[in-house]
Length: 272
Picture 1 (tube, helix red, strand yellow):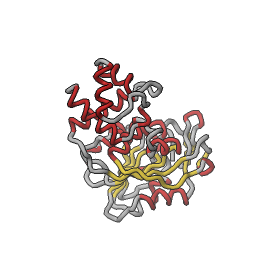
Picture 2 (cartoon, rainbow, N blue to C red; picture 1 turned 45 degrees about the horizontal axis):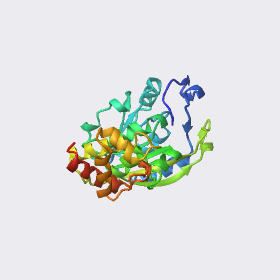
Picture 3 (cartoon, rainbow, N blue to C red; picture 1 turned 90 degrees about the vertical axis):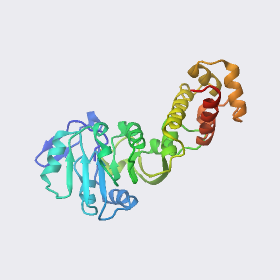
Picture 4 (cartoon, rainbow, N blue to C red; picture 1 turned 60 degrees about the horizontal axis):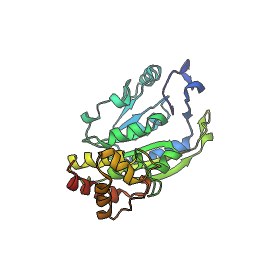
């Protein structure tokens, strides 16, 4: 399983990861089965796998579900996966960020994703009109920490994940389970879609607010908002006071509920 996509060295049907591109294969059966177990798969499922690499996880998935769509950017790996001639495997040689998820219905995403794309992939699948029924990803442990963070350690990524998904953490996969071992441990995360609490326009305003609020983590919420919305300090101070939020708090300390209430207050009083 590649952590990063890129060129590979092909020797017959074997592929060796290139250290210069940060590629690492996960071939540990126990770790792969832990990913499968958390996905609650059935024989009727459609599964999208992102970054299948040499197919260690893919080969387990096709035995359990109706169809697997494997999205692999590396052309040589895509060609190799097609040579497996698995009847229920469709290989798409495409950048996952360009893949048309909107064409799918009732599907799951199960993958050991490229680390550098984690944030973009989560944002992409979160904003889909047809979000997956379930998502199981193997990510850096640090990313798993961010996705499930409590107030005090929240980030734009964490708030995005927690607005759209019920986030739970699975087993840690230690670096020695990869070849070659990366410098960090990984962790399986499971995302279940939440019922969205806001209509699209208010949702857009919420995440605009969060982005402005995190424009500088070292500054207070008051300073970030007055500069971001280009309004006077007194107005933002009043909005924060009415929302029971101390003007000197840092953005990472606000809970998702506080961000939502603050967004409603800003819409009422600033009208944007």
